[in-house]
Length: 98
Image (cartoon, rainbow, N blue to C red; front, top):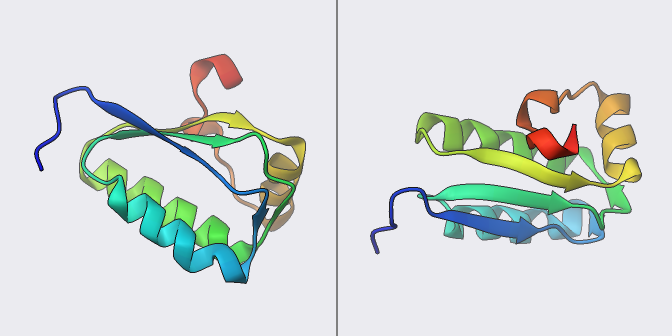
């Protein structure tokens, strides 16, 4: 199905992004591919490295597709975990979230 130019979809992340949630996260991301994506991580309480890898691979896929990919809201837990494991998403944060 063709998407309209400039179409933006959103994805609200689960509170717990652990190994058990990794395959669901990947499936959800891939089902939204082809249009811009705004990721809401405001409710994330815990995130594992596997899900961070999936999100970063998603960001790269959207960049390859030349589609916008951004985090519109992020929780403190999400931000602190990414900092702890050395992942910088500043370039992916929506301007109003910076």
